[in-house]
Image (cartoon, rainbow, N blue to C red):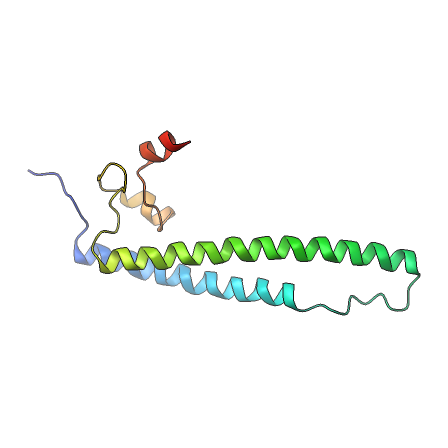
Length: 125
């Protein structure tokens, strides 16, 4: 029996549904993070001492920077999921871009945007 070279249309549909669910959740989280970064001009320390206000503003700045980094990571995750949907449409989803082998279903369920089998990923490190 020949080795399987791509996933069936039914299997691709299963992965598409998984990715669409993750994409919806990721987009909601991204919007929430973006709103956290954009909002919050009033930090609630108007009636406190100047020293405390400076400390609060510093902490607020650090928090916004952290939220901005998280939002960027989420945006990149969304792009990876969208690229995975394109690969599904092209019927190239689940094929390692280095070895050409089929990426195991278990890996794709855990990391649906994966483009490498574990061996290829470990060799890149």
